[in-house]
Image (tube, rainbow, N blue to C red; front, side, top):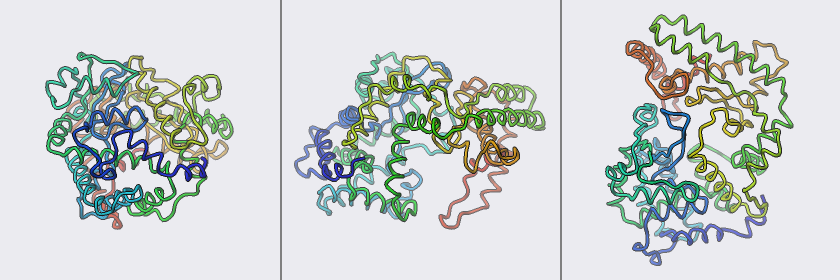
Length: 492
């Protein structure tokens, strides 16, 4: 990171990119011409540059839920600039007010007159609130059945005719993928798509453009000037209570880890990871799986057919511990990154190049068979976390968590079982929680639970929910997240 170069380039590097995309209306003022604006074309421009193009409709490529040997295209609702739960609190909320102030401060920093920013970006904020209203909640999205709605592009065009879907998808996926009208696409949230088309039809183009441009600007602030980053910190202080900015070296480490996780992981495991920890952790997983097997055998509310399926699923659960061996092979790593261009003097453009490289890798995989043991998918290991993947029926315990408080190969086993053991138990249990239980032993989305057993499961789940709903975090006036609490209890 060349701080001097960042300061020298200032905000012009961002302004030039915005102008190439048609300009930010609130900044351009009367020079901005709505007749030449089309939100689809703006998303295409974002995509070519390396910006996120999913601010209104998110287009992704992912594993098919009912056939996890193939990938498919997915249309979904986007993430928002502020958490849906916060933004739905409305304009009186301190979080929404802080978010709006952030928008104004950034616009003024870029050269906008404050009164114009307040007027126009209030309309942009109201538009984002409307997007939140037509989006599904996190709780609703735990029902996988609702999220699987496969249809051809021709069928999508007939049902959601406000957008030219064939042209849109081919432009977004260009140059890696070309589709025709018979291509199968999973419309994850049909209700959102339908409501979006209606919302766009009654929203002025200037408001649409102001919103989309704001979202792009917000996503790039970390790569810009100190003044911009200070506005970001002020917003984070409102949102998270952050009192000061992290040290520059921490920001750099976090940025490299986030942008180049495979290379960061390769450096980490070569220098810091003890391979003895890998075999010790594998042994622990074996013991914990045996314990979970015994728990399933002892459940008095589960019918025998569901129990048999659950035991089969637990037995077939795969474990990715530590790191894949490919992280030690420079030739493999070099080939994977051979088209990536990073310039130490061009922080902003290097970030965009990394995004383009990542997009290329993802989109190019559409026609390739899914490899559930791919080293690429299990190589982000320099992190203190662990995961369960329902489509693989696998857990991942990265090298980064097999150290420190959680684990040491020379500690007494009971200490490791109390620490990392509870994490492993937590991840295994995810395979049988309200989301994981919708996938079978092979990671296929299907209903394998007996109806009566399902009812008893929900009844017992409700018991824990009722218990923890009695606990309130006074400082934020929020009840405890009951879904997570269930998993933590079971992990222990």
